[in-house]
Length: 312
Image (tube, rainbow, N blue to C red):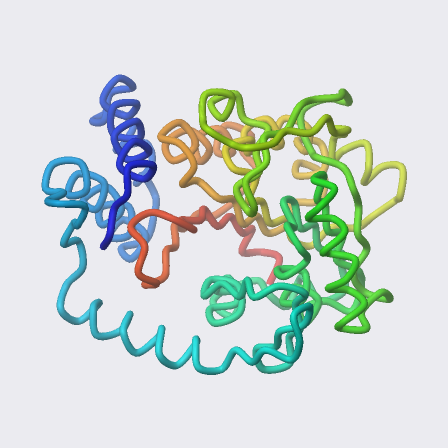
């Protein structure tokens, strides 16, 4: 895997942070009650981090097995060859249209692993929250799994405008509701640091070289759900490190409705190790798993899945 300076710095910080936190105790807490495949995923992710930090030679880290390398090569050839440019403002992969060529494997090829959920049927008659919706790409996938609405939250103006175009291109205004708010622990105005799909409210990004920033409105999911009287079946977050803050503002919704949770935990060591214990402390009967599909990356899109199995 190619490792540029930016990613090397990210991996070094990730490792430094979990070393300071105490890897032994936090590792034990994370893998407690996880299934065998999830434990293997956690172990593999940390092995990738260690390899990138300690065995990165000339901007390259050999982190994948020969089997994984073959899978990645085949995936990239198959996936990339199916993306068609219709115009400068319209690209298509299978039945999905986007205003820019930004088709991600985790979204359109793996569909977030939704088919692997044990309680997927419980989502069908409820709304889905897409927190960190970017240009509406993920909402196109989620809308297939509910006969209700997908509420797609994206605070960055440029991304939000592209999401409106995505909705138009796919004729899905009846099922995807665009919401130009960020989701956090309280209602406030904050400055967001803009970098394509990496736009972030997280404090650590004040020190990173994002070219732009924007003041945006933050609300809580609890307030939005209460005001709109929503029944929530699934919550997906990809908030570039603001997940814990989001969960504080979604606690009542999660406790009352116990939706399926798909929470990104790869943005920081704190998220990786602390989010599962945080949710466990609420004692809601969730069963947890950790997923990461083979896609050519070392850490990206590592996701914590939480399901209440009695919701089948």
